[in-house]
Amino acid sequence: MAKLTRADWVAAGVNQLKEYGPTGVSGEKIARRLDVTRGSFYHHFTNMDELIALILQYWERTQTTDILARALQQDIDLKLKMSVLLESAWNTDAELEIAMRQWAFTNETVQQHVERVDRIRLGYITAVYVQLVKDETRGRKLGKIAYYGLLGALHAWPRFTKPQLKETILEIQALMTEGID
Image (cartoon, rainbow, N blue to C red; front, top):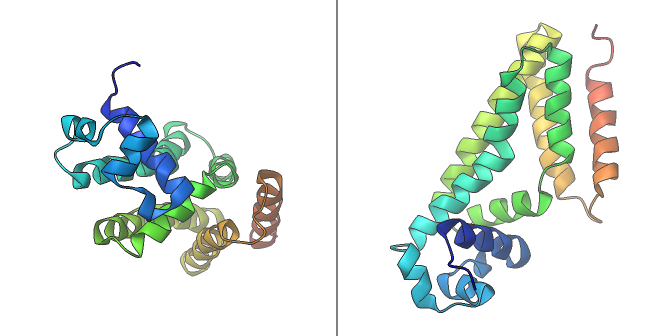
């Protein structure tokens, strides 16, 4: 077996979280998943807080920072910027998003991180809507509808398939931006 890295532990931790929820994230359970001893965990990390911080960084980078960087890096018009955001919404890792929010109910560090990420996401999407509709009040309302609508859609049961989620997001977007040039 190849030598494990911290990234291997983070990936295994993310998968444990997605499959088993917050109770699946422990040094022992992740070690079992990786088929190594728990001592290997302490070779890579001082404690669980260190691994949790890396899992949170992974979630924020893959589900927020990378997406916003794509939307910001190009000098694109607002409609194209919006399409980048919409596409990322229906391609989100729903299992990870749901598991992270479940974890926030029982872990204060995770809760604070989720709240911060929500502020970043909501702030960005709201700013795009404000520019798109050229109305601060309406733009803020549309941003909230779009963001909290997505979070709600991710929790729908039975679970949406990606095509169903895409269709729902596009329908909501069409209603919200009806009449905008």
